[in-house]
Length: 201
Image (cartoon, rainbow, N blue to C red):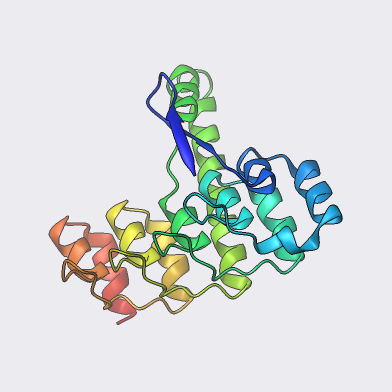
C-alpha cells in the first residue's frame, strides 16, 4: 500500500487491489460489483500493507461498506502487516481535517458543528458495535502489543472504552512498553476511564 499526502497533511492510500481502493473510498456499488465478479476477493489482502477490504472501510469509518462486507461474512479477525484488525482501525479513527473544518466553521451556527461532531462519533460507535457483534477478537494485539482498548484509552474515548469493556475486553493486557489500558489511563490522569476500567477488572 503506497500513500501520498494532501495539503492538509492527511494521507491518501493507493491500494493495488481495486476492491480495497473502492472500500476505502466508500464506493459501495463498486465493492458489490467486484464481489459479484469474484467472491474470493472478499478477504483479499492488498499487496502493500496487507489491508483487507474490511480493514480499508474501517480505516475511514465507512459503515455501509463495512456492513455489506460483514453481511457477506468477511473475516473480522484477519490482520494486516502491522498485525492490526479492522477493530484497531475503527477505534483509532479520528476526525478528518475536513470534519474539523466543518465543525469550526459551523459551530456558531445553531450548534451545527456540534451536531456534525456527535453524528460522526455515533457512527463510529455503531461501526465498533457491529464489529463486536460479528465476532471480532476484542483482545487482538498489534505489532506494538496494543489492543483496541489501549488505543481507546489513549484517545480518551469514554464511550468506546465502555463498548469494549462490555464486550469483555481485558483491561490488564500489557503492550510491549509494559503498559496496560489501566496504566495508560492512570498515566494520563483520565479519571473517568480509570474508574470504568477498574470496575471491569
